[in-house]
Image (cartoon, rainbow, N blue to C red; front, side, top):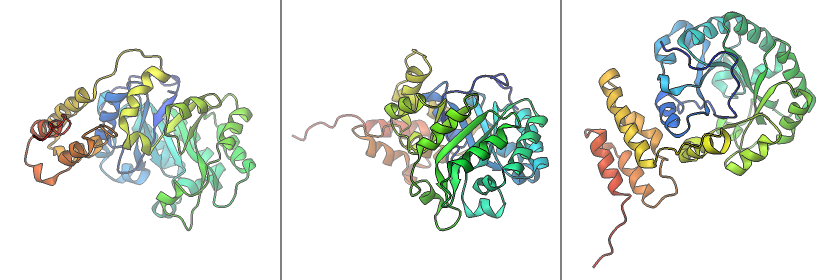
Length: 336
């Protein structure tokens, strides 16, 4: 287990990287931390059942470098949420987050995720139980509405009910969640973004920390949102264009220390891959998938990415693969 580097109750970072299932595992988070020292990173959603009846270490182990770090839970039973929040605190997480925004069929079958927005009282009971179980900050991630209900009042009442528990941190995906008829991917793209609902929440609840999520892809957009809310959560753009994170510390956290270069980040990840192989027997190939966007938009990026993802190099060491990949980035001499 690791010891938290952030005191419970410490201020919530202005920028965060969203919890993304099958993507933001501990290897991805280690990579992102090389790019930003201050952004809050989230785990993938971990269900209460997986923690209470499965391999706790596999789900909760992380690298101490990942701080500040939040654990996202999926569940609805207050007693189970309390037990898992206690585990998260024991393992050293800086925040425990309850997922009230995922619309997938698997989550709905478990009666949690976005469908919990219909049961604000149950959410409040769960949040209160989590708070009573540990001193770690507890937060909620949710949508602005469910299905065709575009009423701001529905959103306001949900947040108001939960906030009465003392929960003060809400991350709001500015789209409705459609529980029927749309896939999880379509739920991230089809329902229209209504940022105004999130801005109104901040006006109505000025003492709450309100972060906005959904469709945000540029530094200028982040700056614009931060004029109206307290924080911004970035999802897939952070994964596909990770070098963007290297701008965040200077732009939003006042950290003027020059970030690592792309080459330094790649070499740090090579050392990490070697360390993981020695310590846990983890093959580097499964880690390398997270760094494939490092040179996104740069000359030679496609060749570099192709080398790192080529199954034919699996038997090589990550250091050897890195040498091949970096050659792809070198300017090609003109043919004689």
